[in-house]
Length: 223
Length: 223
DNA sequence: GGCCTTGTTGCGCAAGTGTATAAATAGCCC
DNA sequence: GGGCTATTTATACACTTGCGCAACAAGGCC
Image 1 (cartoon, rainbow over the protein chains, first blue to last red):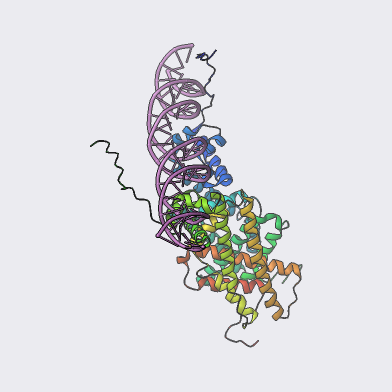
Image 2 (image 1 turned 135 degrees about the vertical axis):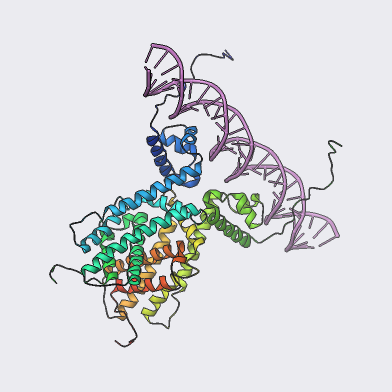
């Protein structure tokens, strides 16, 4: 039976469910971030992304006019989530400024902010910032926003210590502390198993307090 | 005259010069780094790289068995050059330990180490470290090597101050100082125009000295 | 100067890419 | 329950990619 030309409905069309636009877009963005983290920008093809999202490639075009726009939105979502998590550690109103600072440092040097997948995404996208002004701008805004948060926390700590830093001094402290946290974040993401639990936080807190010239408070809480 | 089947030698074959293997490989690696920095890993195609190196794409296969090996060697070359430059600032034997430390910090926060192109490459490759064990290992070795340099310099400074830190304390200092320099390096590469000349070095030196608990030496060199 | 090695070119190929578009069907409205 | 429409699938297409291969010529050697 060579060419049976079987008209039987053996080739059934794939079943599918309709989803709301918000849900689909969110799923596609998440699948995009997953694919980029795993395969890089080159390996994150539309077909790979669609497969991970559980749809077919053509559908992506229905929600995003081009692949570039999808990547753009995915990066925006990533940056937004990162800054949101970072700031979340600051909503402890009943603590002393110094305690807030320590908690801020610790939060940014622990899960879920210390995360190899997020670091891969951060590095992958940032590698293209030099050639992509939109990426560069998105990063710049996120960076300055974060640094301003740091500066505000530092100002609170110094005020509680009766110190009156001028704007330049405050800016330098914020830049340095931001650098400390960035550097430790990278080390934690890339080689987390090299550090014992809480070690990075301890190093970070000590370094930040040294930068600010805070006397190390030991077992004696009374000065 | 439709199909003149012109056998005339109008299609001249491209002229070329033979180069030594070392020179060609080096040129190809440089062209690869340029392409990756400009177009990303996705845009750095064999044809793009060959064009920049002034050869045809096929030749690359003659020196590198696959594109992946070419990228691998390019990254190795990049890391090697970076660490080499970083260590170059340490070859000043006639300086005090503290001066050596300051010079080390300054060198790592100035050109040519502060460089947007190098940062793009660093980030691009590191973004794939999670999925590529070879990249991860290359980075790990470079990082540990650099941190050991830092630790050695720190040990020298503290010894000159009559201080006897234990291994754990020394390690923590090295991790923190490494983080400070990494963080400031990133900020300088990504947004160099936001900082005045020498500002990053000044911030870095102050932060490092604060981390080590060194008294800020002002106009009075005598203690 | 002619030969011989091999660095180098030029072209082809199969696989995979993003995009375009027509056909189908899921699910809401009445 | 029967249409209507927008979501989703499926397929086609032009193009690029990394790689393979055979012809070619540059330049050292005798």
